[in-house]
Length: 254
Length: 254
DNA sequence: AACAAACGAGAGCACTGCTCTTGGCAATGG
DNA sequence: CCATTGCCAAGAGCAGTGCTCTCGTTTGTT
Image (cartoon, rainbow over all chains, first blue to last red):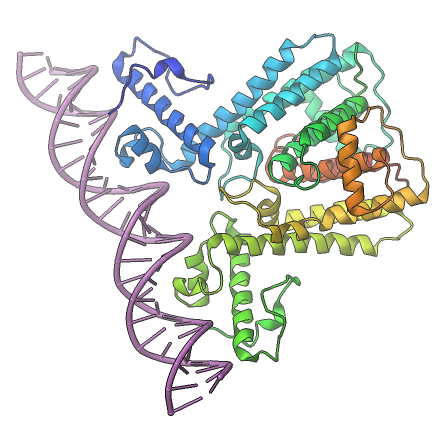
């Protein structure tokens, strides 16, 4: 059967589980429930890491946990809900890995911070390819990402925006872009700047979006097999393109 | 039942179907077989376009064609084989769309040729999102792309390389890259240049890879929902980044 | 005409997500 | 303190899937 004792100790990434607000006061009932939810996601995460998202089976996690498949539905209303939990976990794991790498870098070394983020992202993606595919690959069939996922998904953009703000504040000269910004695009950038409330000018922001897009374009190409037979050691190509993007942002070693 | 007559007329893209080498001489048997294969892929393609790859069901196409599900296995050994045929078709459709757009542009207008390719790719991707996801999204579960797919997949890289060769031959000054090329990466580029046999120097080739990666990174972000709530009109962002990449390649309007 | 290969249909297996019902246990209210 | 209410696990069952095997039938070749 289930062993409730050893479970609460090993919840890997701190994903906001539905463990209400009370942990001990609200009785053992709610706690056992939270632990079981964690146990289900743990088993599902293992299955995802081994075989990928499409092979994730509710019945298999039920077997793994030694319970009836129908009992899973007491904790997750559908397979998509379980997948959503895994998506949120993956976004948070990737975001946390990048944030930690970023925060370990010298704050005054803007180039080092950018490199840390980029290589942390690649490191996480290559060691967790199925989780990466889950969040940056094609969305699962007819599955629309619920609102719960957009917040964890913004961790990396937010992190990059923090970096861009420091770039803007540092006063380094961002290379000119030889491309005019249409009024429509400028309006979009304005509304975006309003949301984040920083002081990043159009050129830097748009170049940053390009760097962000290139970063994950590289990871997609590497992990989804577009580089095979051509750049089999994608690490070198990745490092180069990351540095090239940094150059466009005006990032230089201190 | 099946209507063999009207089928052979509307095979959309010229995918190399297993129609042996003889079309009329080898009897009606082989022809009926080829037509049925085409009919199966046609139905599967419709189902893919409507509901996505994961929802593609062999039994559903069998029902659509009015035949037993087991009969499908006379033509495709597995569901993955059917998916592979659709992947090849999609690669060819996208490649052909880009090639046609490219060939319609003024050959001396290098910027126009790049823009044509990029916007043709986006146009195809946005009108065929499920097909796009099939080839540029996460690979289906434990499914390894067979060798038949790598050839159609190279159509776009080949097309871009053709363009880069003309850029190199045109003698326009490609902007310097402020990033050193490691010896290991240089070796990879050398072996790649050996395969394609052109005269594109390291900087141009690597910048081209960056442009190629950025192009599909943008499409992935747009189609897989990473731009929602931020750049809802991804067309503007796409056009800007495409032009910015062109600028890095030294492409200018004639 | 005889034979062999290809073929379509059906039954069946193991699997999936999901629903409904049944019976037991825990937490709370009178 | 007992009874009621709600939570929970389990089982059966439904509709669907990919895939296999067998069994007649059709088709093409010798």
